Image (cartoon, rainbow, N blue to C red; front, top):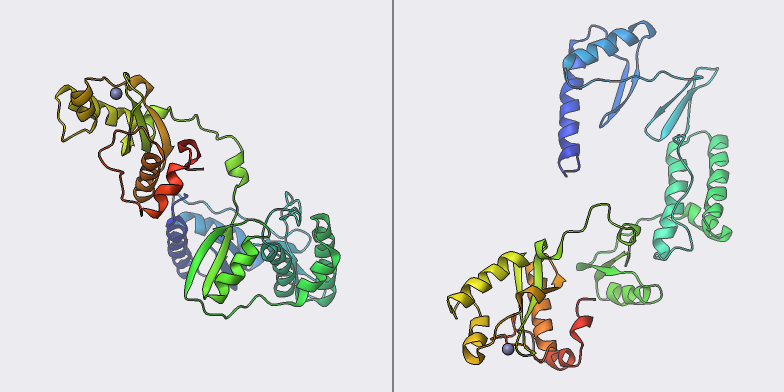
Length: 336
Ligand SMILES: [Zn+2]
């Protein structure tokens, strides 16, 4: 699981099993609804266990489990269906026992429309899932309470109840901006007027803030890096980039220097001209960037912001307009 095609494959597999099971059973269910691996079945009471056993004979590796109605109620996805004494069916919202009613808090640093979407989605779900007006009214009251608990102002969630989300505006292009309260909204308006659709992404997610569960890779083994090798005998440095790890690239530099292969490493020129040696042990990673194009820009920025580089060229040729800015920028500020 985890691959983008997992859901498609799971669906195809279950579709195949379901078709086989339905066509080979003598008294098929009166109703068979399925969403991926969740099914809702109406079948003769005496046939429940026979059909369940039949389903489990189709594929030896896939076992179906079964849940019977409790107090005339059964859940299917996020709907709970109840049989009333007069044999009619009513629907309500189903919530798992682990549900905490915690949603995006209104004080969170998120665009306002994303917060409104939370409220709209909840009210919209009550509208589409619950037909009985008394039950729906009760659920709407419940939503208002839950939204209040999540910091939503009272007038706001009343306002969102009857609005629709449809937006038929046509845009020429699309861009994604990091969200900064007070700035992104204005930028969005300007870009929208220019025909650019804008989506906002959080600057930092909780996942980025929490420590990583895996041990960090030791620097020399990180791949896709911009690195610096200092000269042992003067204050010059060489800045380079590689898609592989620093150790592998340093090995190549060392071999080139040993063989005085000027074509393979710019470091040889410095050794030949000044008879200096390099301090390989103090080589360090300045930036890790897996994207080749971005890495070249970082390399170029770092070369241009450092006045003691012995590189033959400045990497990817940056427009001269950036040179003055980079010269007045400390290399340590690049990449942040
Ligand atoms: Zn030197």
